[in-house]
Length: 386
Image 1: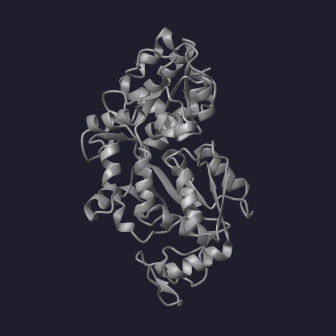
Image 2: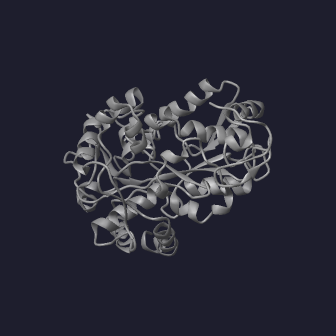
């Protein structure tokens, strides 16, 4: 069934997005965490919370000793990850972050975890789409951050295996110096004005952001979260019309004019426009198609075979701190703990006023629907979109 998130009106969110484009310690003895699982002191690879293994001071000390953290597929412009990574290294100067394959996909994260298992270069943590995650739950280690209660129950695994971090809205970015009339919907992109101009973020069978473009097209063309076939059919038509580009869009391809139209998350389109400063395209604008808004929370998770297990857990504690959740918000991505931050007063009110409230009716696929959609994409995408 369709899953919806609640807060304020979608019109306010769309308008705001458009405007943006113009510690405690415990004993070192083994303890039992909130889920009832025991964790041996000193072994952070099995720790299910900081409090179960000596507390935050012990975690920081162990992470400093490891001295490294491996992240993957985190472009600096994506949801403010450039500032987030820099902030972590400033807060914990003894830990160096190694950022691999920044333009990769969720499937690339899984591939790296499997192929580099047992190696020091394997990813420690994942920022991963739901469909790919649901097929690889054996790769994640349960862990509950200190403010676990601030993450809504529906937005996390009961055992701490995964937890939502942020979402945006699926949007259309376009170069206004090339496209003179703003597109209003995915259907607009079938027109002759878009011949050889439309790109999505990779292969929908591998990347959640690309798959979400298909989901949005499905919703616009009579489909649903349970039936994404109309979205696949839409892209077949887009390809047949000669409008679809077989190019992975990046800030560089947008700036060069190679990809004048990109369907991707709102926070990425925003970052590639004037909000990107000197690195952005001053003519890049963002449109949230009218009608049902489509979102998809990405998931944080720890690699069960993380080569730096303490640093991995410290990263998650950092990610769910109000400071970093507010950095997500500043990029136009709505963080998982937003409702709790509004309630306890830790949300940056100036940032929230600028970005706009989270949409009232944000549709996203459930884990079951995402898994079903992934299966259909695997069997139908290549034969439809040749």
